[in-house]
Amino acid sequence: MIRARRTRDRPAGTATVSPRVGACAVYGSAASTALACVAVVGDRTAVTYALGLTAFWWLVPGVPLLLVALLRRRRVAAVVLVAPALTAALLCVPRPWQGGVADGGPVLRVATWNITAGAPARGVLRLADDTAPDVLVLQEVSARALRELAPLGVAYPHRHVSQHAWAAPWGVPSGTAVFSRHPVTGVRPVEGLPPAARPTDVVTLDVRGRRVDVLSVHLASPCLGCRFHPSDPGPAGGTGPAARLRSQEAARLADLARELHRGGAAVVVAGDINASDLNRPGWAFARAGLVDAYRAVAWGPGLTRGARPGLARIDVVEVAGLEPVGAWVGGRGESDHAPVIADLALPGAA
Image 1: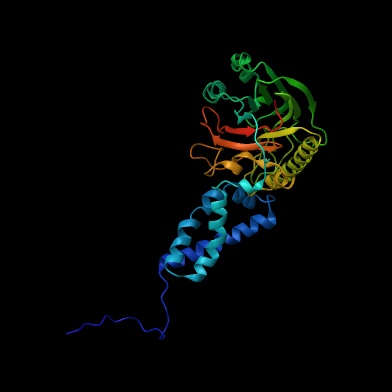
Image 2: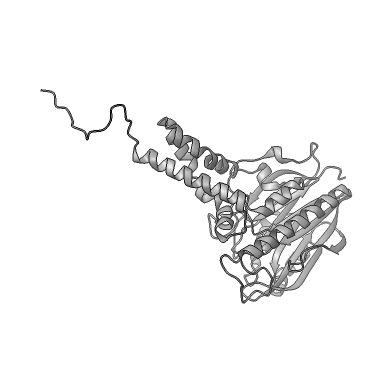
């Protein structure tokens, strides 16, 4: 006797959609919509800024879900998953097509780190011992940190420190610094930044006979959903004003880097830009022809902000006139950021 399983009445020829495939389609539609909002609205709202900042985490599920949709031959689900999956992949693979120079040269190792004002700076000493960078580019350098970094004077006899009036939200005055094994031949302030921006300087190095201009940058910090941060005399205020300030800072720094490079210098713009790949500041650097050293050669999302594995990649080494040949993210130590180390080929150096 053959038993037939009874099913609920439904029109002939109607195909069922499994909950798994339905979830793929719902996620793909939501993620694609979010990407469109980030592209159109930009960083002006707390939601779109945060979506751009944390894009890796909410996009990476698109890769396995796209595979599920393709295996089950669900075309609609696959179509809406293409954008999230492709974007997630681009946040994890090298992009050598973005630029660089054709010929090689001696390698200049640059490390950048927001060492977190108020935190112990001994991690910088470990970083210097472990990776031996030629140039250390630091942010949130307090008076205490400078005292703790005194032992670097032997290995890094040349340095420039820019202490300014800005205080971190926890109330510790801090600034930026460049420690170098190579001679500092000039320092000048960056002009044309918005009045509310944190100041920075162009530090000119003589690297084996080649001029290298280094900028240690710290763009406006976010204040998601708030109108004013009472502990920060910096001007950024709420999400929208902070986003506009970051975009203006990035545009000015990008234009300056392009001018310096056209003037014959190799240029390194490194530091904490408080923005990730889908936020606006990175777009300004890319339009100016700067190359993101980590994105050019490294695999993986390279997340630098927050406890491991990290929330976002907001610390960068952008270059012009140099070719990235290696890059990686170091350990966080006592900071809430991780350092980024980049090996850069320097054409034309002796």
